Amino acid sequence: MLTLALALPLALTLRGMLGDHLGSSLEAGAAADAVNHDWWQEFEAQASGLGTSFTPSVIGFAAVLDNMSSVLDARRKIAPVAGAAGAYLLLWTFLSGGIIDRFARRRPTRAYGFSAASGVFFFRFLRLGILAGLVYGFLYVSVHKWLFDTWFPNATRDLTTERVAFAWRIAMYGVFGALLVVANVLFDYAKIRAVVEDRRSMPMALVASARFVFHNPGRVFGLYLLNALAFLALIALWALVAPGAGGAGLSMWAGFLIAQVYLLGRLFLKLHFIASQAALFQESLAHAGYTAAPAHVWPESPSAEAI
Picture 1 (cartoon, helix red, strand yellow):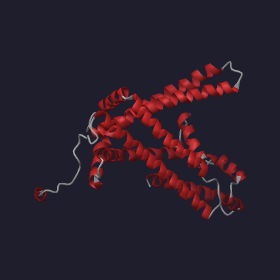
Picture 2 (picture 1 turned 45 degrees about the vertical axis):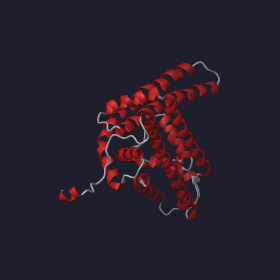
Picture 3 (picture 1 turned 135 degrees about the vertical axis):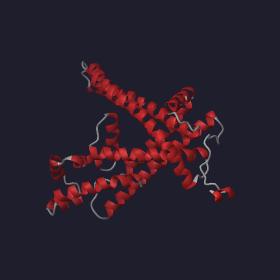
Picture 4 (picture 1 turned 60 degrees about the vertical axis):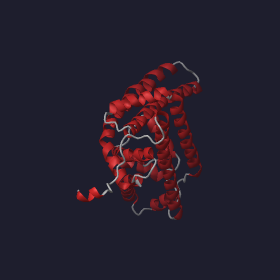
């Protein structure tokens, strides 16, 4: 629902742009029935702003590959898409505290407990997000630029075989991807330690996270690998069933519903990822039910009536 709510305004805006460009022309019927390459090229040539995002890469499984490429190649998003992504991250930051708290307690916290935990950790996670922004900014601005703009050209300057150059580029993607994974793991466990141990200092939570990962590398990255394989299995399934550029009517709505099922699957895996990391930390560092912060519940004692 969160993804749909943030994407809907952009979709309606793009719908209006497409409608204005097509009008009541014959090209409109052809575009609705199938892919109209001639019209699409014409639209791309004159598109601006959000319209530039309407490319063949938005269809089916190509969207997944395009997102992966944008992460590894450090491609900038256009302002409307970047704004929606920022809003998504902000809302997810708010929900993360309640989600981790619920998984750590291993019992229902109800709406009051969930919202209370989300509110308590929201500003702490915002401070942690600033640290994450600095780390990821360094990786993309400095490390990525050095790997792909300096090191890769120097390493492949005298090569005569394209396959070797391609292998080097894949290796660069592997190095950069590994650095992203390490950063992601550190900030994930920083959030978990902040919630489970009720930490207020986010730099110290990050230090504690690094200490935990350093002492348990096999279990931490083994769990990450298992979760990543589950995600890749979902991606592979999506590659098989992802709808293409179908026509209007029933096929369009069927494709939409299939896409929503895929998004629900991704959300399930994301929540499972958080739950498994919280369980690993609690099992490794303390007992299974360990949490420092008291449960957020409304008082039910008779003294509550006197408040």
